[in-house]
Amino acid sequence: MNDCIFCKIISGDIASKKIYEDELCYAFHDINPQSEVHFLVIPKEHIPGAKDIDESNSAVVAHIFKVIAELSCEMQLNSYRVITNCGEGAGQTVKHLHFHVLSGENLSEKLV
Ligand code: 5GP
Ligand code: ZN
Image (cartoon, rainbow, N blue to C red; front, top):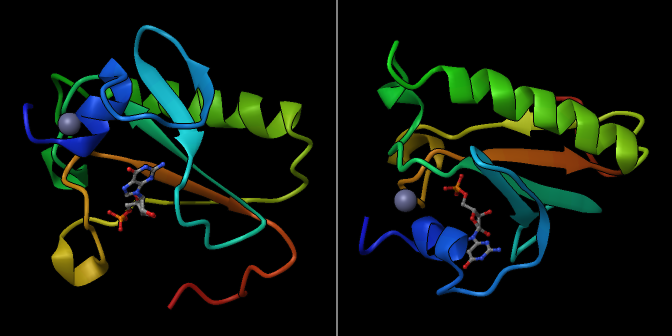
């Protein structure tokens, strides 16, 4: 997608602090961290959001959760939260599927 900032991050047209990359996904630090540790994991394929996950593309979601488990282990995160916002009413600002990984002392116990 030409006008998608996360596609531009994957291609390197927009700089990012990369944590991990493979053929299916890309992980990088959020530019505006909401907790001590806050990174994003995105599929390399442009999927607009969680509502667009279907039979044809759902394998990448399982892969991303496996990568998150590996990264959290490497980063020695004892506990963490994974969030995906879907739709503007839920706070989705970038229309490329992404999973927030949040960790640190300041995580509230409630989601909303
Ligand atoms: P959303 O609000 O769509 O759930 O999450 C989008 C996230 O992307 C936000 O947490 C925001 O800080 C992050 N973000 C937006 N633009 C950039 C960028 O250019 N670089 C990085 N690293 N993060 C970004
Ligand atoms: Zn995109």
